[in-house]
Image (cartoon, rainbow, N blue to C red):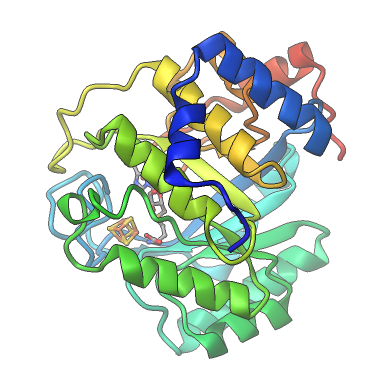
Amino acid sequence: MNNLLSLQNIDDIYNKPLLLLIAEAAQVHSIHQKHTVIYRNTLVSYKTGGCVEDCAYCAQSSRYKTNVGPSIRLSEVEMMQLVNEAIAQGSDRICLSASWKNIPNNEEFDLLIKVGKAIRNMGLQVCATLGTINREQIIRLREAGFTAYNHNIDTSEEFYAQIISTRTFAQRIETLKLLQEESMACCSGGIVGLGESHADRVAMLHSLASLPQPLFTVPINMLVAIEGTPLENNKAVPVWDLLRVIATARIVMPSTRICLAAGRKQLSAEAQSLCFLAGANSVFVGDKLLTTPNAAPNNDFSLFKTLGIELND
Ligand code: SAM
Ligand code: DTB
Ligand code: SF4
């Protein structure tokens, strides 16, 4: 276990007066990270939709009637076109995504390995989020130059079954441990706005901080309420709650990148800046996340310039 903080310790941090919490997180940030660096990652969705899992928030689950149809797949040329656009938009990392429960050992995985190698050869970092992965597949990704794997726990162990019934929280943790055993850097985080309590958020952060190795990245997503999913009518969570989650994550996982992930489009420039002050130092850039629009690239450029963010780290 890399972290000796108890659930109670993390709860005490999460519940501090908000300004004090942000100030302490900013101080931790200035010791372990650089305030002028924000890492920029672009999602490239190879397989979108038609997923057999039932994640209640997701546009891609085949259980729900959303505006995302049955699976569509991109060709190699289409993926490389998106990679080139991402470079033009100032991205330093590509995350290849697929709506799989388990990664198939077939020509589709071979294709993603090939595209990953091509991305590395262009001087970018490459990572992936493809569902549950086994040891041999982790080794293949590592040998191809993939530097991280995303596998979110989404929420607390207690609340998990209310959001996803087709897999368990324990299975997610097992996969993360397998990745760490194989020395693959892990990216794992969750969502605020699923209907979880403050205690669920604290428990999620405790689980993330208690993995055998520190996480490379913790993405914090604001729920993007998708029409047709069971969570379509969920109310947006106040930005103050998001700040508590980010600041607590920064304090309890000082060496980890904290990613202000989905939901950035809905935040003002000022709210995003508070998130960066509270310890977020990574974002998804580009017009699109997986199925929904992202914060506009032009607004990002102007915000990064205003804040004095270095774009060539
Ligand atoms: N299918 C793979 C998996 O579940 O591991 C990878 C892609 S999945 C879409 C990646 C993560 O995006 C989810 O675990 C969830 O945390 C986040 N996500 C998906 N839909 C979202 C939504 N509507 N709002 C906020 N976050 C979302
Ligand atoms: C993560 O935690 N968030 C990203 C990435 N990892 C794969 C995905 C956000 C998806 C938002 C909803 C959508 O566009 O469908
Ligand atoms: Fe499938 Fe991932 Fe969406 Fe869950 S979050 S339904 S596993 S694509």
